[in-house]
Image 1: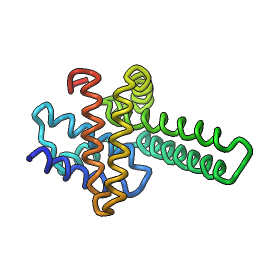
Image 2 (image 1 turned 120 degrees about the horizontal axis):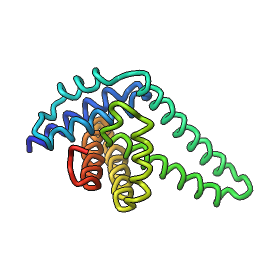
Image 3 (image 1 turned 30 degrees about the vertical axis):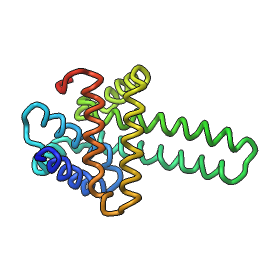
Image 4 (image 1 turned 120 degrees about the vertical axis):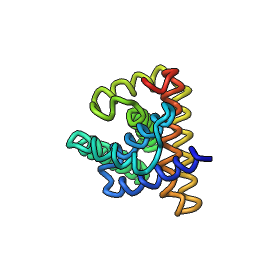
Length: 183
């Protein structure tokens, strides 16, 4: 029960840190780092979360957030154009959705990697490799994201708690892939 309470407190802290939108990758990456530390005997508290976030919030994290936001907006615009009835729209919508899902999986897996605390490009490269070579883990990441979105959609106050279980799921997929919580 302690880990469950810690996950919820880290999730609430992550939701608060994500409110500026461009801080979402840094906030989720910090949550994954704190929860990964719980597997190594470190406390997984909101206080430790904010300490990790303060130490690591830098220009590279904000650039990662801007890139993630631009990707989401581009995918939404593409899907809106496909819904407008352009020729070839059904195929375009499927392709755009698949590219968006793949980019989302890579981005979420990058947040779970330890490299994301210091080097986003290395984390993204490693996450892309993981996404291709661990299709089961990528499916689990998508399932965790869909579950978090459905929970938030069904009961809006849960939107402020879902980042914690999502970060726990991302961390678990990464630990499942590497076999140890120290990688």
